Image 1 (cartoon, rainbow, N blue to C red):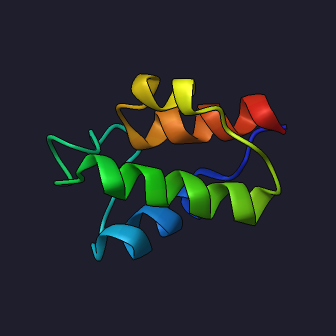
Image 2: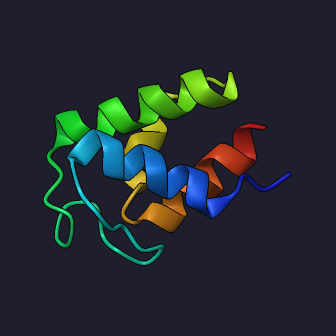
Image 3: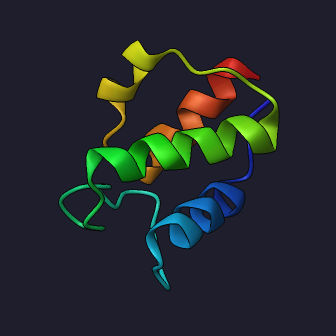
Length: 75
């Protein structure tokens, strides 16, 4: 099951206070996220989808699409 990209984008936008977040936007370089932001986004996704994400997986997250793929692997 693949989560809806728009749901992931909404979480990213809310966490970062943005109006837009495209699938290929890079969290750090394009959206200005810092490591704490990424952790907060992942925690929000864990709560939303009732999943657990290993800390080791955080290093592989570069884009909004990566977040969607991460959630999809945990569902």
